[in-house]
Amino acid sequence: MGNIIRSCTQTVLLFVSQYLSPGDTVIDATCGNGHDTVALAKMGAGTIYAFDIQNTAIEQTRAALERAQLYSENIHLIADGHENMRQHVKEKVSVILFNLGYLPSSSKEITTKKETTVKAVSEALKLLKKDGLLCITLYSGHPGGEEEKQAVLRFARMLDPKIWHVAFIRMLNQPNQPPEILLITLKRGVQFEEDK
Ligand code: SAM
Image (cartoon, rainbow, N blue to C red; front, side, top):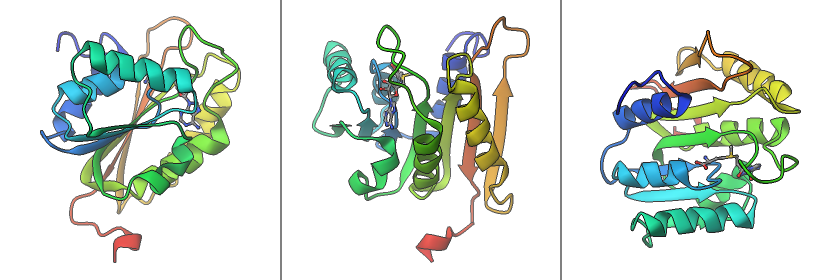
């Protein structure tokens, strides 16, 4: 694992490793170049739902999984917005990852947007198992990124503390606007309204 506060990616993967057991169902809400999907598969996820609105991202993710010899029929690559995830995922999941912003080395115009992101996070929470983890990597350095981050944080601050644990991690001494991490877990023993 190395130095886990060296980079956001390392920190996120450490948290994920604590919440993912072999065979679990998980969601990559923004699969992009496939790095996170591959990491989830390597950690032993049983079923993966990976979303992206760009067909190139879906194909890059498929290629990355094939290169790692991890592509299987249990990995569902879905060319649709994550805000529609509940149309595709009908089971509870233990980990959900969002890596916001734009696809590196692609058009910076095609980026996650505050309205759809907040809707997607709200939908994602309805799919989370008790003690499951929803993890969002936020970027504020690109146009619209700061507004998106503030909208997500506003939503997260409003979550009922009797039901959710919410934490925010910021790399304090990094230059420019480094990524930040929002972690949300559903408390053990709490019954989510829709499941009653
Ligand atoms: N996690 C990726 C990886 O490991 O390579 C990087 C993700 S990249 C920072 C953000 C991705 O979100 C882009 O590929 C973009 O196309 C995608 N995206 C933007 N809006 C989306 C939406 N509404 N639903 C799903 N994906 C979206």
